[in-house]
Image 1 (tube, rainbow, N blue to C red):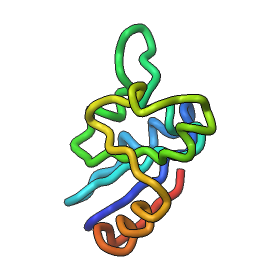
Image 2: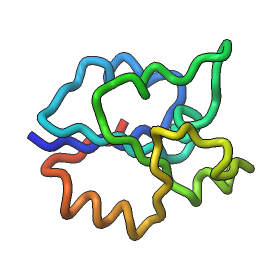
Image 3: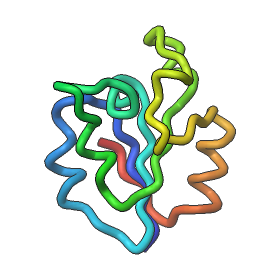
Image 4: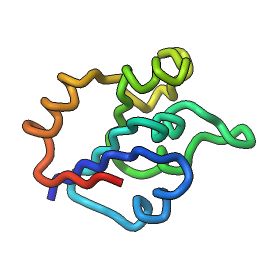
Length: 98
């Protein structure tokens, strides 16, 4: 299964995401979930970035929070709304919103 997860929170979704696996896994960080792509707690990246997955962050949500491309971890691809639509329809079979 090709699974895409929209991560829209920073603190409460990590346990659920940790338990999910798929043949192909993609995490799209949106809303406050963008902090997984940027903020380093105690000098460490978000542990979600250690999962075997493709990572994306919505550019508009970064900008809304005053963050720039330079703040984003190198493992995360910055995308816009059009890119997200393409990912949903062309890359993944199932979508989860957390």
